[in-house]
Each structure stands twice: as structure tokens, then as C-alpha cells.
Image 1 (cartoon, rainbow, N blue to C red):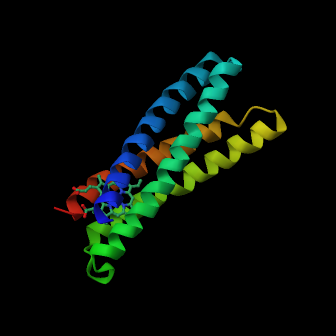
Image 2 (spheres, rainbow, N blue to C red):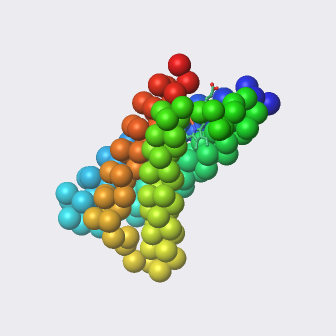
Image 3 (cartoon, protein in one colour):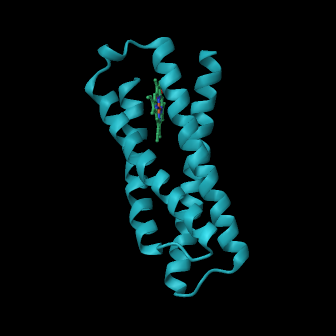
Length: 139
Ligand code: HEM
């Protein structure tokens, strides 16, 4: 069970990182083009966004599972808590971006791209903190 959760954690890391880089690059292109993206690109960005959101949920579920199964939460050092702040700084903006994208999809209006850009920058910072302090905390 523990091994399965660790594998899920690593896949979550891979899928979340890939989604963040992919959609970040596309978002930059869309913003600089100052024109609405072709439907195929907009649709793909929506799918990549959902993959990223699913990855974060998997990271949280597997992370909590690993913690409960093999660590004493109360005895974790400060670096682990900084990692969790980083993970929260990923979960919150990515959830907001997903909500904005779903709302835009439903109403047929383009999402607020400037807001998406700020949120994705916050999430990228959170990923960096979660990875760096994750490695420091567990080594
Ligand atoms: C953006 C979110 C997250 C990222 C990028 C991330 C990243 C990482 C990385 C890189 C490691 C490997 C550390 C190493 O073994 O050297 C790791 C392990 C771990 N993470 Fe996360 N993590 C995230 C979210 C979480 C959350 C929310 C929790 C718990 C509530 C968590 C709990 C753990 C635990 C317990 C391990 C140790 C696994 C082991 O014993 O081998 N992680 N994480």
C-alpha cells in the first residue's frame, strides 16, 4: 500500500509538473498574441488544466496517506511544514484556475488571462518550495 502511494505521489509530481509547464507556455503565447486562441488550443489547454488539477489532488491524497502510514505527523521537522505550505500554494491557485476555466467554458466567454497568469506563477513558486523542502524534509 505504502509503495503504491509513493508511486502515485511521483506520478502526481510528473503529471502536475508537465501540465504546469505545458499550460504555462501556451498561456504565455496566447497572451502575447493578443487574440483568442484557436478552439483546438483552447480545448487542449482546458484538458491540460484538468490533468494538472487531478495531479494535485493525487499528490495531496497520496501525501496524506504516506504520512499517516509511515510518519509521526507531530514529530515532523519545520522543513516538512514549509513543504506543506508550498503544496497549499499549489492547491489553492490551481483550484481557482480550474474553477475559472470551468466557468468560462460553461458561459462560452474567455477566462481572465491576466488573472490566470498570476495564479499560475504562484502555483509554480509553490511547486518549487514543495519539491525543495520535500527533498530536504525526507533526507
Ligand atoms: C505540490 C505538492 C507536492 C509536491 C510537489 C511534493 C513533492 C514531493 C517530493 C519531491 C518528494 C520526495 C522527497 C524525497 O524522498 O526525497 C515527496 C515525498 C513526500 N511527500 Fe510530497 N509533495 C507534494 C504534496 C504533498 C502533500 C500535500 C503531502 C502530505 C500532506 C506530502 C507528503 C509527502 C511525504 C510523506 C513524502 C515522503 C515519501 C517517502 O517516505 O518516501 N506531499 N513529495
